[in-house]
Image 1 (tube, rainbow, N blue to C red):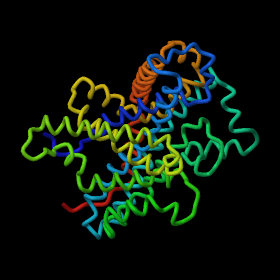
Image 2: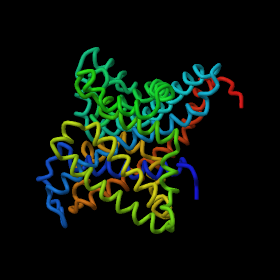
Image 3: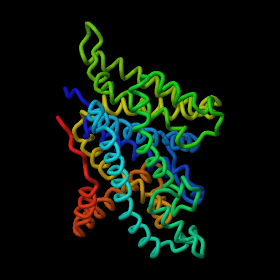
Image 4: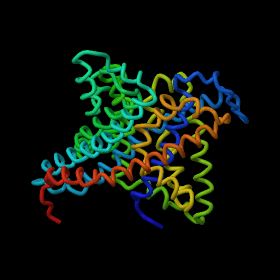
Length: 370
């Protein structure tokens, strides 16, 4: 059994997260669902809408996974004091570059598509010289942080992703100084301590701190490998499944309770972790399912960036024409996956990866002693 949570495992979990994101946006958007003859069977409409609202768990999953990956990188270099600061600067610049360089081709794609199918989309930038400032801030992923217009609202997450990249070295330093429980505890009570309103960063800060702890202690793999004493692995798995499903049920209920609405940071850190554990323990060893989830995971960034244009801006009528709530989501998943694959092929033909690699080479990595 693999004793580490691998990159392929990460991709599979990202695959689950992007499915949840697509489902979430299909039924929590401003789309007039009553305009389409959607069948919600075998559930009531309200049940499907609640499940889609709950599916915002995807954000916490992406936040946790990012913190997990960054922590592993920091952990490798942290004992080397003379090189630590330079390496952290290098790593931060490289991660920001990878986010933005992955975003820009999609921006060009959705701009071209909107010129054809949704010209009114550009009205969000308004007129005059300010539109160029708004476009620049959008291209830099800063629109949500600066409070300026965004081409599409989904891109608010770029601001959170960039903030996480910048803050993780600070959080990890705090972790090394004071330990997991103090860091995680503070992350939960920080809004109360400071008296500030709940921001996106504070809402998902506990998910970041849990990601740091789980990465440093390799807890995902430890949990997956654990066997109840004097029992076989199969017995352990059955009990783990029951425990996780019960926890998932209570997390679902908590999301819609008064406590959950007032303490989103708790819901949005515990629930993603439960879903990640279920995916990692029970799905990542199922070959066919895992391969498909990993494929979705590889394209998750592209799909996140453009899926709402496909679903709501350009082809809303087509997207909701498949009647059944689950089929609408499935078709959107497949549409977005195909489009992302084609987009990556175009980038390859244009040698875009060579350009991004060339820029990365200019972000010089400091020498690391083994």
